Image 1: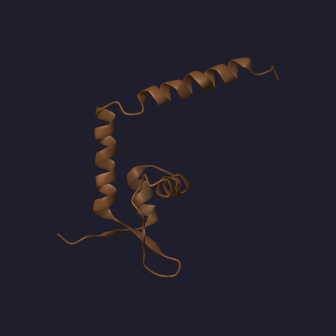
Image 2: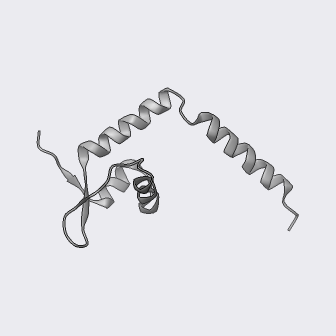
Length: 86
């Protein structure tokens, strides 16, 4: 099967993340790196993006990050409740 390149706009629609968040994940090694097509154009390999999505689904099934997200929620509520009245 031939590989297909995806534009950033296609990737954003497919994974429901902002451009900034995608680049943060790339920098952290947590998202497929783009392929340079020219001096100001990059594209993503569709199969790599699909594999990333499948990995996220598996992580959900394994409840990966559930404790971290719960702790973030608790901290956010605590911060909200402890802030001075406006």
